[in-house]
Length: 215
Image 1 (spheres, rainbow, N blue to C red):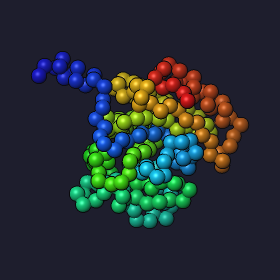
Image 2: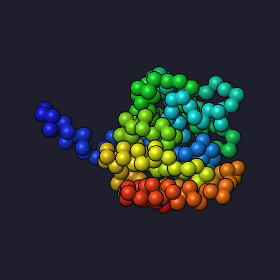
Image 3: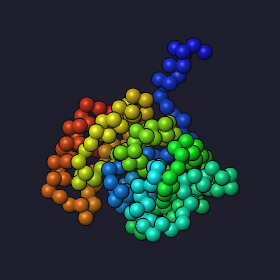
Image 4: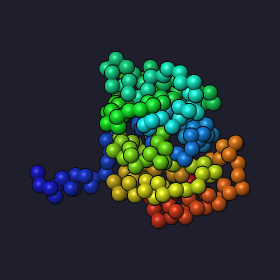
């Protein structure tokens, strides 16, 4: 196969997601996990939340006592299934599989590739990726059926946002059916007079990427 033929293959739209769709949500702050149901991004009857990170960003918030929960890497064991992993955490309406405290990135990607076909009752997996980690996990996005961004307006936009946009657009991961939009939230303990200004700044920063239309 010629190099030019390989180039054409990698330019094709990525659609490697399988029977259980994975919806990837990039987020700005750990507390946004408490806003997902209110935003209509989480169905407690059908979804499981998967944290994709190394180390975990959510453990400090959800599991401060370091209780023993099996993480995503357990899926690499043939006798383990999604419904056996993670746990139910206070104020989060769906089960959460936390990322490990430390892990090889290739192992995480290998485990994530099993989520779509694992024999569990969940109809969808919601994969949470912190915006600051988004570039590190770009190889995982071929497995995603759809994408969205959850942004707490208390957080000022940073350079990782346009970097993420370039990855998603450049790799042909986005079209109207796969991008759920940018969803603003504001945790009740993060109220601030600068919040609206932050939202305006985010809109301006992403204006050059029409594919990332705001909800």
